[in-house]
Image 1 (tube, rainbow, N blue to C red):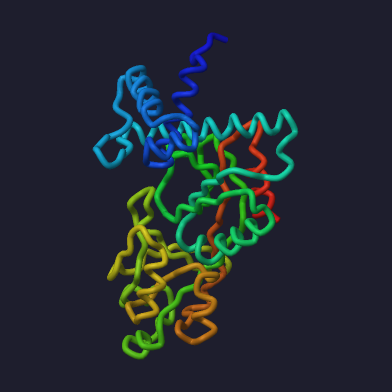
Image 2 (image 1 turned 90 degrees about the horizontal axis):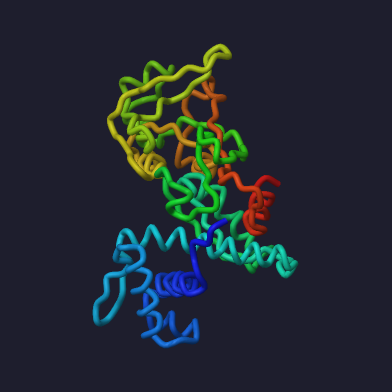
Length: 299
């Protein structure tokens, strides 16, 4: 295979990543044991080779450009994989180590994942876990994520999806709302109520509400008196404050139901759930930290 990089170019990439992580040529130089001028020259050579500007430089600070940020994420991931490969080949990595980047939607993060991250870190303190809580779609390669948790399995054949659970749904409202508006007696009654809906980021459409009737699952749109975007937990918060009726994950409102802050509605039409999947790129050799986290969650 033809060589694409010489030793100097690889060194420039390492110094570039250090500068991007530290936000400073001086701090990067201190870590690398070279002068700030050497870091600046390496980055300049890299910019000349690529034909793009990687940093915006001022007298006080440096900041990655949009192109620089995209290149930084990919270079950082590639260097991390090289370190993992060396550890695996030499047998020096006996415990998981390094940075693990995870993207997870808000309800699953707060009610499920974060408590498990804490337990994982106690077991594997050498792993630095970076959790990005967001419902938006991500690009593993462009953004340098190791793992993601999502509510649907991807169609992309380059990704692996492992089901974590089928999360039960619950229709809820506050006692104050029900005192003012009354209780719905069937799913069709919801058309006359203030329904709190969520916009699915991937499609821009409202997520339909799911009910079970005579053993058959049905979907209803309900009214759209209030629409929440981006943060799924916004529906729960609004329902707690009397803003209407919401269909949410049961695991997210268990405490509020137990305390009486929320009341479950139409339980006779319950029994529906939505899946959550652990998703990661298909790779012949997963790094030890990724493999350990996958095994930890699936257990």
